[in-house]
Image 1 (tube, rainbow, N blue to C red):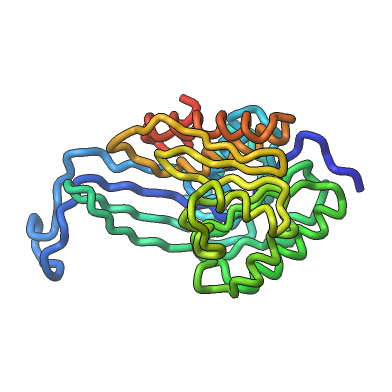
Image 2: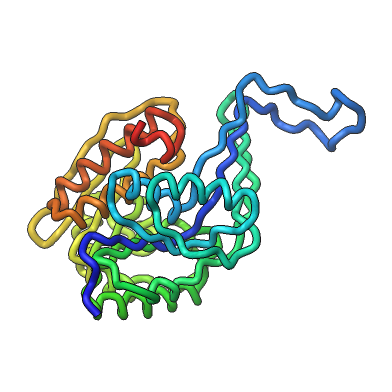
Length: 303
C-alpha cells in the first residue's frame, strides 16, 4: 500500500474547553439559598476546541491541508459541537463509537490562579489509524489517559506505518511521566521521524544542561528531527545538519491555551509540504504567537 501524498493523520484526544474568568476562590462548603451560592460573572464564559488531536487537526484543516482525525470524540451534545467545528475546517473524522466527550472546565481567579475540573472521556484507539489509506505524515500526541499499554500500542502503530512509508511526528506531552519506564519511552523514539515536546517534558526522559545540547543529544535516540518548544522564548530545532535557536515575540498576560497544538499543526503541515525544518518551526512559532494574541485557542489562530 502506497502512502497518500498530502494526507496527514492526527491521533490524540478531543476536549471541549470551558473557561470561566474572574471567579473568586471558594470559601467553605456550598450554601443553600439564592445569592448565597451564586457568583455573578463580569466576563462571558468562553468555550474552545481542545485536545491534542482535535486542536492540531483543526489547524491543519484551516490551513487547507487534507487531514484525518483518530480521536475519542463522543456522540453527545458536546461531541456534536466539536464535530461541527472540525467539519467547518474540513477535517475528516471517523464515525464516533464513544459515548461521552471529554470536557475541561477551567476557573481563573482575578489574580490568575487556576483551578480546573477535567472529565477525560474515553481512550483513543490508536490501532484505528492502521485502517484505510496510509498517510504521508502521522502526528500522535499524549493526553490525560495514556499509560504503559498506550506506549506499546503506539510503538506497533509507528512501526507499521513507517514500514508503509509514512513519516511519524510524536509529542509525548507531560502525560506519560510516572506511567511508563524511561527506557521504554526512549526506545519508542527510534520509531519517530520528528520528535517534539517542551523543554521541561524532554528533561523528564533525558536530563541535559542547556537546550541546544538537549536537542542535539535527543537525535541519538533515533529521530531525524527534534524540536524543543520553549514557550515565550521560542524553540530550538535540531537535525544531523544543524541546531538552530529560534526566538519568538512574547505576548505578556495572554491566554496560552492551544498554543502548543497550533505549533504542532503548523509544524507537521510545513514538513508535509516540503519546508525545511527551520522554516517550518519559524512558521509554527508565528502561528502559535498569533493564537496566543487572539486569545481564543486554535479557533482564533487564523482569524
